[in-house]
Length: 219
Image (tube, rainbow, N blue to C red; front, side):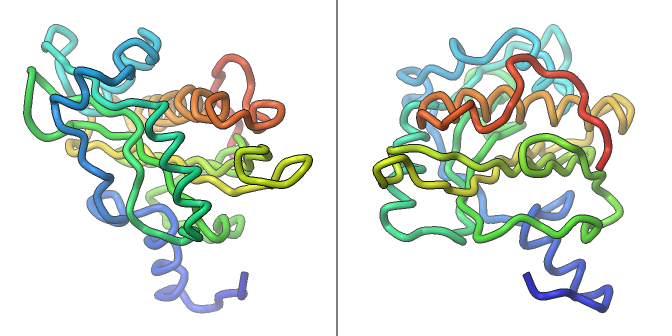
Protein backbone atom coordinates (compact mmCIF):
# COMPACT_ATOMS: atom_id res chain seq x y z
CA UNK A 1 0.00 0.00 0.00
CA UNK A 2 1.24 3.48 -0.86
CA UNK A 3 2.42 5.34 2.24
CA UNK A 4 0.09 8.18 3.08
CA UNK A 5 1.49 11.38 4.53
CA UNK A 6 -1.32 13.83 5.11
CA UNK A 7 -4.23 13.56 7.52
CA UNK A 8 -7.13 14.13 5.07
CA UNK A 9 -5.92 11.28 2.87
CA UNK A 10 -5.45 9.00 5.87
CA UNK A 11 -9.01 9.65 6.96
CA UNK A 12 -10.29 8.88 3.48
CA UNK A 13 -8.46 5.56 3.46
CA UNK A 14 -9.93 4.56 6.80
CA UNK A 15 -13.43 5.51 5.74
CA UNK A 16 -13.07 3.40 2.61
CA UNK A 17 -11.62 0.43 4.50
CA UNK A 18 -13.77 0.36 7.59
CA UNK A 19 -16.57 2.93 7.26
CA UNK A 20 -17.14 5.91 9.56
CA UNK A 21 -19.26 5.54 12.67
CA UNK A 22 -22.36 6.86 10.97
CA UNK A 23 -21.90 5.84 7.30
CA UNK A 24 -19.22 4.23 5.15
CA UNK A 25 -19.61 1.18 2.91
CA UNK A 26 -22.72 0.62 0.85
CA UNK A 27 -25.53 -1.12 2.69
CA UNK A 28 -25.36 -4.88 2.81
CA UNK A 29 -27.57 -6.88 0.49
CA UNK A 30 -31.06 -6.75 2.03
CA UNK A 31 -32.48 -9.83 3.71
CA UNK A 32 -36.28 -9.82 3.84
CA UNK A 33 -38.29 -11.37 6.70
CA UNK A 34 -39.39 -14.17 4.34
CA UNK A 35 -35.76 -15.00 3.55
CA UNK A 36 -34.92 -14.86 7.25
CA UNK A 37 -37.60 -17.43 8.02
CA UNK A 38 -35.83 -19.99 5.84
CA UNK A 39 -32.35 -18.93 6.95
CA UNK A 40 -30.30 -20.27 9.82
CA UNK A 41 -28.87 -17.28 11.70
CA UNK A 42 -31.30 -17.74 14.56
CA UNK A 43 -29.92 -21.25 15.01
CA UNK A 44 -26.24 -20.59 14.27
CA UNK A 45 -25.72 -17.58 16.57
CA UNK A 46 -24.82 -18.47 20.14
CA UNK A 47 -26.77 -17.00 23.05
CA UNK A 48 -23.82 -14.77 24.10
CA UNK A 49 -23.49 -13.38 20.56
CA UNK A 50 -27.23 -12.73 20.33
CA UNK A 51 -27.01 -10.86 23.64
CA UNK A 52 -24.02 -8.87 22.34
CA UNK A 53 -25.92 -7.93 19.18
CA UNK A 54 -28.83 -6.65 21.26
CA UNK A 55 -26.49 -4.59 23.44
CA UNK A 56 -24.66 -2.88 20.55
CA UNK A 57 -28.02 -2.21 18.88
CA UNK A 58 -29.26 -0.76 22.19
CA UNK A 59 -32.22 -3.15 22.26
CA UNK A 60 -33.72 -3.87 25.69
CA UNK A 61 -32.97 -7.32 27.07
CA UNK A 62 -36.70 -8.04 27.19
CA UNK A 63 -37.37 -6.82 23.62
CA UNK A 64 -38.60 -9.38 21.12
CA UNK A 65 -35.79 -9.64 18.59
CA UNK A 66 -35.64 -11.39 15.23
CA UNK A 67 -32.29 -12.71 14.01
CA UNK A 68 -32.09 -12.78 10.23
CA UNK A 69 -29.84 -14.15 7.52
CA UNK A 70 -28.52 -17.38 6.04
CA UNK A 71 -24.78 -18.02 6.63
CA UNK A 72 -24.61 -20.80 4.04
CA UNK A 73 -26.06 -18.53 1.36
CA UNK A 74 -23.66 -15.76 2.38
CA UNK A 75 -20.68 -18.14 2.07
CA UNK A 76 -21.82 -19.11 -1.42
CA UNK A 77 -22.07 -15.42 -2.33
CA UNK A 78 -18.51 -14.82 -1.10
CA UNK A 79 -17.22 -17.57 -3.40
CA UNK A 80 -19.33 -16.30 -6.31
CA UNK A 81 -18.03 -12.77 -5.85
CA UNK A 82 -14.43 -14.01 -5.80
CA UNK A 83 -14.99 -16.02 -8.99
CA UNK A 84 -16.49 -12.93 -10.61
CA UNK A 85 -13.41 -10.88 -9.76
CA UNK A 86 -15.29 -8.80 -7.20
CA UNK A 87 -12.40 -7.91 -4.90
CA UNK A 88 -12.80 -4.29 -3.86
CA UNK A 89 -16.60 -4.28 -4.26
CA UNK A 90 -17.96 -2.00 -1.53
CA UNK A 91 -21.38 -3.66 -1.41
CA UNK A 92 -21.57 -5.94 1.61
CA UNK A 93 -22.77 -9.52 1.59
CA UNK A 94 -25.30 -9.78 4.42
CA UNK A 95 -24.43 -12.56 6.86
CA UNK A 96 -26.51 -12.14 10.03
CA UNK A 97 -28.47 -9.32 11.54
CA UNK A 98 -31.10 -8.50 14.12
CA UNK A 99 -34.06 -6.18 14.42
CA UNK A 100 -36.62 -5.42 17.07
CA UNK A 101 -39.98 -7.14 16.66
CA UNK A 102 -40.97 -9.32 13.71
CA UNK A 103 -40.29 -6.90 10.85
CA UNK A 104 -38.52 -3.66 10.02
CA UNK A 105 -35.06 -2.33 9.31
CA UNK A 106 -32.14 -4.21 10.80
CA UNK A 107 -30.85 -2.75 14.08
CA UNK A 108 -27.46 -4.41 13.67
CA UNK A 109 -25.96 -6.26 10.70
CA UNK A 110 -22.85 -8.36 10.06
CA UNK A 111 -21.63 -8.20 6.46
CA UNK A 112 -18.63 -9.53 4.55
CA UNK A 113 -16.47 -8.07 1.80
CA UNK A 114 -13.46 -9.03 -0.33
CA UNK A 115 -11.09 -6.06 0.12
CA UNK A 116 -7.96 -5.53 -1.91
CA UNK A 117 -5.86 -4.94 1.20
CA UNK A 118 -5.98 -4.38 4.95
CA UNK A 119 -5.24 -0.93 6.44
CA UNK A 120 -1.70 -0.16 7.53
CA UNK A 121 -1.00 -0.38 11.23
CA UNK A 122 -1.55 2.98 12.89
CA UNK A 123 -3.42 4.41 9.89
CA UNK A 124 -6.90 4.41 11.42
CA UNK A 125 -9.29 7.12 12.58
CA UNK A 126 -9.33 8.06 16.25
CA UNK A 127 -12.82 6.57 16.65
CA UNK A 128 -11.30 3.10 16.21
CA UNK A 129 -8.87 1.04 18.25
CA UNK A 130 -6.70 -1.65 16.66
CA UNK A 131 -6.61 -5.19 18.04
CA UNK A 132 -4.61 -8.37 17.45
CA UNK A 133 -7.25 -10.68 16.04
CA UNK A 134 -7.13 -12.38 12.64
CA UNK A 135 -4.95 -10.31 10.33
CA UNK A 136 -6.08 -7.15 12.11
CA UNK A 137 -9.23 -5.88 13.81
CA UNK A 138 -10.66 -2.41 14.38
CA UNK A 139 -13.39 -1.60 16.85
CA UNK A 140 -15.48 1.46 17.54
CA UNK A 141 -18.76 1.98 19.36
CA UNK A 142 -21.10 1.48 16.38
CA UNK A 143 -18.77 -0.33 13.98
CA UNK A 144 -16.34 -3.23 14.25
CA UNK A 145 -14.12 -4.62 11.46
CA UNK A 146 -12.11 -7.83 11.21
CA UNK A 147 -9.69 -8.77 8.43
CA UNK A 148 -8.68 -12.40 8.07
CA UNK A 149 -7.05 -14.65 5.48
CA UNK A 150 -8.90 -17.69 4.18
CA UNK A 151 -6.94 -20.40 2.37
CA UNK A 152 -9.47 -22.70 0.76
CA UNK A 153 -9.94 -24.96 -2.21
CA UNK A 154 -13.30 -23.27 -2.76
CA UNK A 155 -11.30 -20.38 -4.25
CA UNK A 156 -9.36 -22.71 -6.58
CA UNK A 157 -5.85 -24.12 -6.64
CA UNK A 158 -4.59 -27.60 -5.80
CA UNK A 159 -3.68 -26.65 -2.22
CA UNK A 160 -6.14 -23.78 -1.95
CA UNK A 161 -5.96 -20.08 -2.68
CA UNK A 162 -5.50 -17.36 -0.06
CA UNK A 163 -8.22 -14.70 -0.05
CA UNK A 164 -8.47 -11.66 2.23
CA UNK A 165 -11.90 -11.26 3.81
CA UNK A 166 -13.27 -8.33 5.79
CA UNK A 167 -16.12 -8.73 8.24
CA UNK A 168 -18.04 -5.71 9.48
CA UNK A 169 -20.64 -5.34 12.22
CA UNK A 170 -22.59 -2.10 12.15
CA UNK A 171 -25.43 -0.89 14.38
CA UNK A 172 -27.90 1.91 13.70
CA UNK A 173 -28.03 3.24 17.26
CA UNK A 174 -25.29 4.09 19.71
CA UNK A 175 -25.16 1.60 22.56
CA UNK A 176 -25.99 2.63 26.12
CA UNK A 177 -23.10 0.52 27.40
CA UNK A 178 -19.60 1.94 27.76
CA UNK A 179 -17.37 2.42 24.73
CA UNK A 180 -15.04 -0.32 25.99
CA UNK A 181 -17.92 -2.77 26.42
CA UNK A 182 -19.29 -1.92 22.95
CA UNK A 183 -15.88 -2.54 21.36
CA UNK A 184 -15.63 -5.92 23.08
CA UNK A 185 -19.16 -6.88 21.97
CA UNK A 186 -18.39 -5.88 18.37
CA UNK A 187 -15.23 -7.99 18.37
CA UNK A 188 -17.06 -10.93 19.95
CA UNK A 189 -19.74 -10.80 17.25
CA UNK A 190 -17.14 -10.65 14.49
CA UNK A 191 -15.04 -13.45 15.98
CA UNK A 192 -17.92 -15.91 16.15
CA UNK A 193 -19.55 -15.05 12.82
CA UNK A 194 -16.17 -15.11 11.08
CA UNK A 195 -15.39 -18.56 12.48
CA UNK A 196 -18.74 -19.72 11.14
CA UNK A 197 -17.95 -18.26 7.71
CA UNK A 198 -14.43 -19.75 7.78
CA UNK A 199 -15.92 -23.15 8.55
CA UNK A 200 -18.45 -22.87 5.70
CA UNK A 201 -15.65 -21.86 3.31
CA UNK A 202 -13.41 -24.70 4.54
CA UNK A 203 -10.68 -22.20 5.44
CA UNK A 204 -7.52 -23.94 6.61
CA UNK A 205 -6.96 -23.78 10.38
CA UNK A 206 -10.12 -21.67 10.78
CA UNK A 207 -8.17 -18.67 9.46
CA UNK A 208 -6.21 -18.46 12.71
CA UNK A 209 -9.28 -17.56 14.78
CA UNK A 210 -9.34 -19.17 18.23
CA UNK A 211 -11.98 -21.73 19.21
CA UNK A 212 -13.50 -19.39 21.79
CA UNK A 213 -13.53 -15.63 22.04
CA UNK A 214 -11.44 -13.70 24.54
CA UNK A 215 -10.81 -9.97 24.33
CA UNK A 216 -7.68 -9.51 22.19
CA UNK A 217 -4.92 -7.11 23.16
CA UNK A 218 -4.58 -3.76 21.45
CA UNK A 219 -2.16 -3.65 18.53
